[in-house]
Length: 127
Image (cartoon, rainbow, N blue to C red):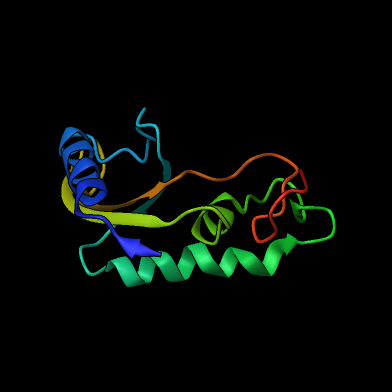
């Protein structure tokens, strides 16, 4: 996987749009995407990647599902998606309107995207 500054810039631009509400809402970009929200400002991109990765503990590679429902493992599967070759990440301090006042959003954009239903994130589909 290689760092892509353009993907990081797309992420930065999108996070600026979230500055006033600090909402963990996915963008409409045509990339794979992981979002992380933290209530305080001490979080790092490494922390976000760690929490996305530990979803692996709930992922069943036999059924290709996260267990038990309603758990989700989409962050993990995008993080390790077999066809993804480029990533760019960004972080943004933001106002958390209506609550404690501050927060942090972290975003990573992945190209090509992954997370196709019923496909193993690590194994190429047979043609």
